[in-house]
Length: 111
Image 1 (cartoon, rainbow, N blue to C red):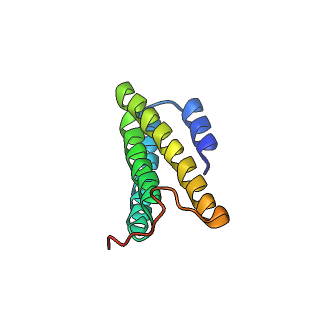
Image 2 (image 1 turned 90 degrees about the horizontal axis):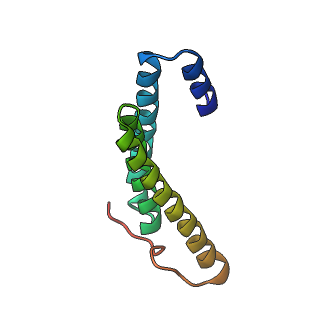
Image 3 (image 1 turned 60 degrees about the horizontal axis):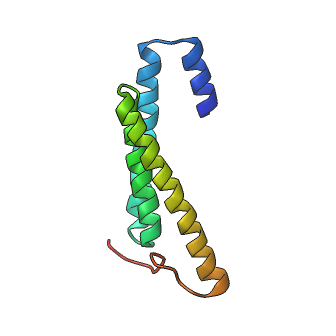
């Protein structure tokens, strides 16, 4: 079920079940991105920043269902996550296509 369909169903059937569903949905995505973050511990720092901020964003979104301030914080962290993802993409392109490395693209092995 996509996010649009989930939001549509929550809109036509408002109530506590919709809030619980949003919290579970965001929490499950948070767990998934946490597992992806563990994988990035063998990649590079830029990917670690992307997945760690995405992990935090999903858990803030899960809490933001019940608190507007937490939801606002999730928006700011999500914006930073998007900006770091754009940087990671350009840094990888510069490394592959132009042959020089920007900071954060050198491989690391934390585990």
